[in-house]
Amino acid sequence: MATPKRTSDMVFKGPERAPHRSLFYALGLTAEEMKRPLIGVVSSFNEIIPGHVHLDKIAEAVKAGVRMAGGTPILVPAIGVCDGIAMNHPGMCYSLPSRELIADSVETQAMAHCFDAMVLIPNCDKIIPGMLMAAARVNIPAIVISGGPMLGGDLDGRLLSLSSVFEAVGACKAGKIGLKELTDYEETACPGCGSCSGMFTANSMNCLTEAIGMGLPGNGTIPAVAAARTRLAKQAGMQIMKVLAMNLRPRDILTPAAFTNALRVDMALGCSTNSVLHLCAIAHEAGVLMPLKRINEISATTPNLCRLSPAGPDLIEHLHLAGGVPAIMKELAKARLIDTGLITVTGKSVGRNIAGVTNRNPKVLRPVKDAYSPTGGLAILFGNIAPRGGVVKRSAVAPEMLVKTCTARVFDSEEAACAAIYARKIKKGDIVVIRNEGPKGGPGMREMLSPTSALAGMGLDKDVALITDGRFSGATRGSAIGHVAPEAADGGPIALVKNGDKIAVDIPAYKVNLLVSAKELKARAAKLKPYRSRVKGGWLARYQRLVGPADIGAVLQ
Image (cartoon, rainbow, N blue to C red; front, side, top):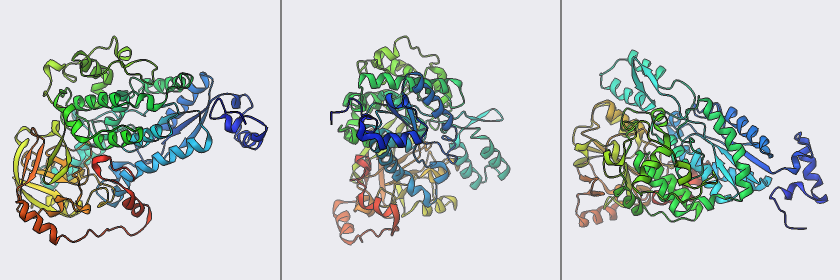
């Protein structure tokens, strides 16, 4: 049999493929449609994630665009988890593992059905990196079109986001607000569909998808409810046919230089700490090395230009009105901080994409000369408690907490830490240590949004730090150090911390250290009992056996 010109020829062409064509006829396809390129439209639409509840409409717009450009679109599903709904209970153990399931399922759909190209439709936290990991792995022409951000809530003139509600819980527990006001928060903060309105993980990854070159301009910031989002989806459907004609593949775009560009934008925006985990995982699939120390090198030379929620009052909608990701890249390009020659899914270079772009609101998106800080929004800390690193959202840390020595209060689960915080057992000058929540220990690196929000809501975010081998939501603010590696379940030093120990945090110096002698730590390590998993079966048990450490993206080994 001759080598197929298209991947879909393996199911469409030749007498041997009559049974295959019969099944396509069963779908209602015509002979004409089987002559056209087969485009997989991978949609994570569902009715449980507010960011995904409208993706059926995005998918229909994509399909329309594909048809207009001469392709045959085929809709296939992908799963998704709402991190907000999964937060602070055992369901959060499934959030990060779902990323691997999504990547595997997209690979399965593409390979089993011989797609010529794919349009990927995610919107929220793990779905975006999962689809990008699959795109890099399968390496057929692909474009990502996300569902867009939620608008902010308005409560008596105050802009709210989901993080406002989590912090309101802490305020309620502290007696600062009553149940009536808490109800007002919960009914107002999330007014409709879209990814949560701050610079949380979903919007971080949607913006970085655009910055790295896998999404069209506007992908990161056009609101979910805007007609422009539907138009962008149609354009993505049309553009995939051009990308296919160019044979432009994800690994042509996902180069080391493209990851550097994405990290520059990450630092300028002050993205979620989870962006480090996910960019490492995507880089792994693309065959690109991304050591954590490289992130600090980029952070040290990239100014922080935005302070979006939770770091400041502005939301994604304000960044969109200021010019979105293209305007950020234009500001960085003026300072020669990004590579403008890189190819993107537009078929054009970064430089051509941002030509003519202007910053329409320097108060939301500051120029480089007026940056919030000369260094980026994220930092990787190293020290004897985190030999392979821990990540902190530096832009969301109060100035008085950038350098601080605190007293350890140790907990072996998120639940235990939350109970102590709500019972007002955490005092100024403490550092809450939450361990056994890493990739293996959790398993699944649960997000510690509830304890960090409780501290913020109680007014302790400028006096209390938190360190964990788990993760944080992008909605977290305060001195919150996560992804500590090695994790406690692997015998990492965080397993050796005792109540009353002193921990020194020095974010400008990229250091975090347990102030206990090496001799004492060695003695504690000799007495350390092996970690005993709380999980005995199911997918999480398999994940626990296979998952790698946080410092390389918590990818399956």
